[in-house]
Each structure stands twice: as structure tokens, then as C-alpha cells.
Amino acid sequence: MRIQSMVLAFCVAVLAVGCATTSTHNLYSGPEQPLEQVASVIVPWQVQVRNVNGQKVPMSLFSGSETESTLRVLPGTQEWCVRYYDPFAEDRLNRDPYAVDQSAIVSLRFAAEAGHVYRLNFETPEQNPALRDAKQRVTFLVAGVGQDVSPTVVEQDIERPDPKAVAIEQATLDQLKSWWRVAGAAERKAFMEWVNEKN
Image (cartoon, rainbow, N blue to C red; front, side, top):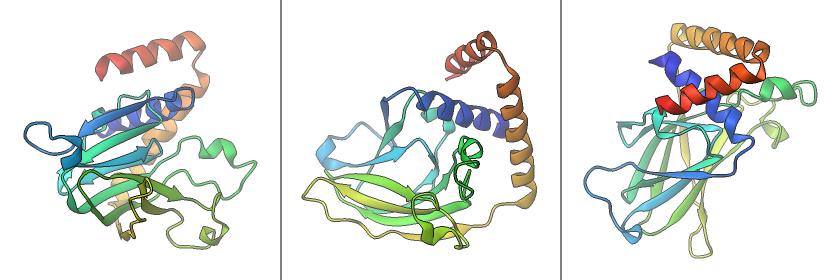
């Protein structure tokens, strides 16, 4: 299951570069609520949302062709577990030695009001030099979209991942990158068609 999630995450990143589309997902139980009764959070493709208010978020929610997703939640205090992930950081290392490919899983807490739209943003050392010597080199913030919504201060804690799981995940990701680099155009196309079928 972890390998399939990593494949999907990698493909999300590959396809997101050439596409400018969005997807919307409701992350609450029960029937669909009117927009004025839920809060919407826009999430860029580089942010993997792992958990929302105690509910696991399956990677299959993100179809692989979006540059961002809109996640709709019930209003109130939010607690999200997220991680920054950019498989293209390695290609930018020759231009910026501070490029970051991934972060630890971070727990975010913020308030969301009904009918409001928010954007989950991030900063890396490439955008903010102050993060170059920071322990957690990626920071997250949630900002209101629209003049009637004031910026939201985000509290964040780092969750320490299992070192064995991280090592396996990194090895698998490295292998996937290696295969992708040596694959021809026809192989890449066939692989992406297979991924889309699985979604």
C-alpha cells in the first residue's frame, strides 16, 4: 500500500507540471453540505495531506492531474497532518543547494469558519533564506482567501516518523526515480495510463 501511495505521489508531481487543473473533495461524513456551511482549504500539489481531524486521507483522492486540490471540511478547529514533498528538488540542486525534496510530517492546528476559503501555503529555504539553518526547513501557513478573511496563525508540531519506514520509503522512491529516468516516452505514457486506470 505504501509503495502504491508513493507511485501515485510521484505521478501527481510529474503530471502537475504540465496541467493547471484542480480537484475538490469533501472530507466530512454525511450528505454534501452547502458551501456556506463548510470551510474550503486549497492545497498545492507539493503538500501531502495525511490526516484531517483524525481521519486518514487516502492518496487516491488526488487524481494525479491537478496542480492543487480543494478540501472541504466542517468548520471549527482543524488538526491536519501534512508533509511537503517535491520529487523535482533533486533536479534543482545544481541551481540552489538548499532545495528540499521532503519534510517531516507536521501537525497543523488552525481555525476554519463556515463559508470561508483558505489556502495552505509553505515556505522552503529556496523562498526564505532564514530557513536554511532551521531544524524544520519547511514551514506551513494557512491564509484566508478574499478580503473578508484575515490571515490564520498556524500552530505546528513535528511528528517523528519511524526511521525504518522512512528508509524503506526513500529507497523505493529512489528506485522509482531511476526507472522513470531510463524509461522511454512510450513506456512513460503506458505507465501513466495504468496509473490513471487505477485511480
